[in-house]
Image (tube, rainbow, N blue to C red; front, side, top):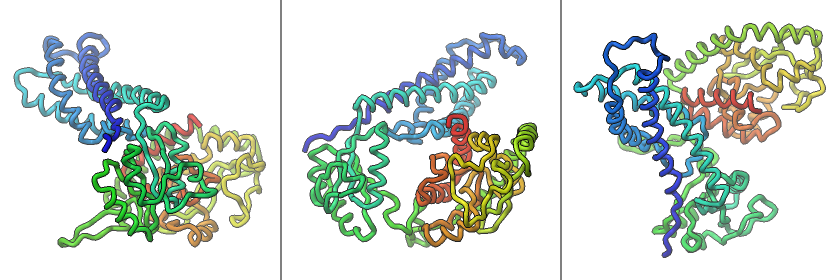
Length: 468
């Protein structure tokens, strides 16, 4: 059996080297800023300037500890394809944990007294410098993949709709670090996205070809009635050094939140659970209340400016208020700045969704929509508790009545408060895009909610507004 290629050495090794250098640089920078500059003179020194070597020795102890913390959180896996926003949040959490280790060690080490100001600077500087290193590493990684180096061979097993979607994603993202070889199915796909890929054979041919072509990743997308084929495939691949990954929506009723839970020794598969605990709802509400209050105060001048512009540009009200469906299917009045001519809005059952370059828009309205500023009054809905900063976008009653019978899991969106922005929107799914795909993203958000997830989506929203 030929040895499969394992192209997982270069990027993780560079990541370890970059992080080690960044941590050491953070120590040196923090020491320099505290003791070698006048920048912090307002914080008087209570003793003589300590020797630099004490901090260098300390850093040599801390570096391997921090690297172990990073590694335990899978920061050095190959082809993680993690967004930089996710990377930043992970770094903040892990550096905070690492600083607790540093301060604990300094507390018990009585031979030398380390500066608390330096530790404070170290927290900020290490986050910034390590994140800068990650940005540089991503550039290197994408360049390497673009040159066709360090790629992993991948195949798809199956030819259903899920397999088509996987292929479309992989073929449109050549910088993910995979080289798509082809697919296995009962028969070749015709007039489908997969028809443009190489047909490698039936399921029984997979084990031999996986070895022959040195395939490192096989993405399995089979229907629920193909369980016998899946079991046989796994059995036949015993001893084959290929990573097998099953697409999570193999069963329509199952979701990304599926977990195994044990009750008195009996394992149960939890297909659906409560999206948020009581404390989770309290934390989310407090976050919404604090952030919306701050944003309303900071943007009060902007509200006045926009109101004046709307009044001068066209006759009519400043705000456009419309009934939407929110948490538990209850309706509320959602607010937006008016962007259309007075009387231009149609009845719910006559209007369209996501019309681009709508001729009914005012000139000011076009600008407001392009910058998404027309959504700003929804901060009032958030403050009142009718909406959240982050969640599935609210829809009108007419469309809810239409979609709930046509789109699977559509009503699951109402298990949490609707939001000003959402996971589907920051992934480009808004306006005239696949409703089914938007629902998948909404359900994923509901089942995987954390406060960090909300903050990540808000950062992505800000980035999308400024760089769209």
